[in-house]
Amino acid sequence: MAFRPSRLAIFIDGNNMFYAQQKNGWFFDPRRVLNYFANRPEIELVNAYWYTGLKDPQDQRGFRDALVSLGYTVRTKMLKEFHDESNGNRYFQRANLDIEIVIDMFNTVEQYDEIVLFSGDGDFERAIELLRAKQTHITVVSTDGMIARELRNATDRYIDLNDIRSFIEKTERPEPFVSAPVIAPA
Image 1 (cartoon, rainbow, N blue to C red):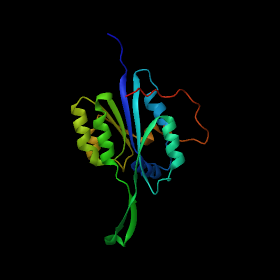
Image 2: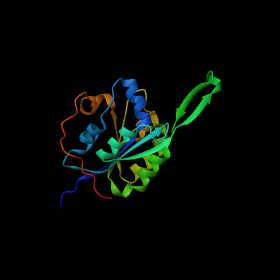
Image 3: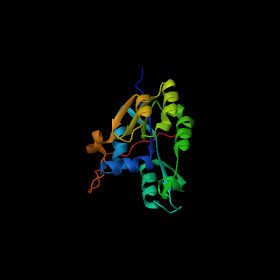
Image 4: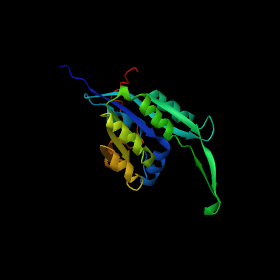
């Protein structure tokens, strides 16, 4: 029987991870994330998705272009403004991309055996349960204090960002290029 690597898809909830990284006081490098999870002979990276909200169409243009050059599929949505009058008319912005993440997970489910989801959002609990029922191995990456208990309980494996910090943290010097992650054609 021929060896077949496990097919991996990575889904990064960029907005959720931005706040998790702010809480931790450090930021991860998207290239190092790919290297950490996909540069092993038993893994075939089939896709990596990055989801983020935008203030305007040009917002984060350089960063989004860099993600694409690394092999990420980037999904965006315009931020919506909200005012919370019950809390002193506090203003905040939000771009909820949960539906887009779940749609991509289920539209590509036949392409992968395992996923890594970077999010702490409990809204993913049911999607994770359904994917596990299809024999998909699920790893969720977030940080304590920002991971919903329901999501943590639904996953096969939970990784705290701080536990892999030395492998994925953005550094001042660019990391030596090990090898480009191979993203298999769809």
